[in-house]
Length: 110
Image 1 (cartoon, rainbow, N blue to C red):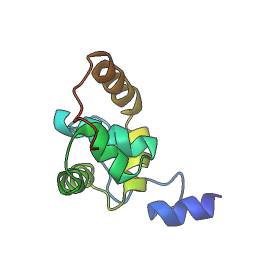
Image 2 (image 1 turned 60 degrees about the vertical axis):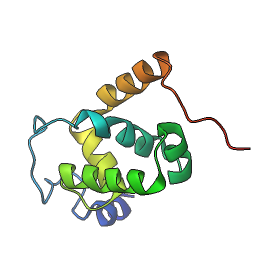
Image 3 (image 1 turned 180 degrees about the horizontal axis):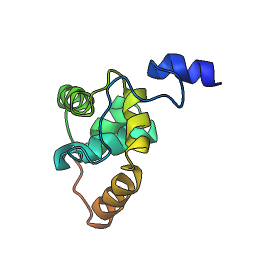
């Protein structure tokens, strides 16, 4: 399993990242938190777009911006870094607050 994970993240499990970043590096910008939350759920892009009320192109651009901000090349690496940096509770808390606030969604198409 460690070999598979090592190949996925690009460096041996337990070794420092090839892009050493302090866990206290700039937090995820507020507009990218919902995008990261959707990536962490494993939702398909179409579902994530619908839930976040954004176009597929905008979602794709935001994912690219998020990966650049974190300094990784893949969505999987973004999830690994989010865990490593301790962002998961922050992301989950933000998702719960958003749901509780009743964020407006686009009406369903008929």
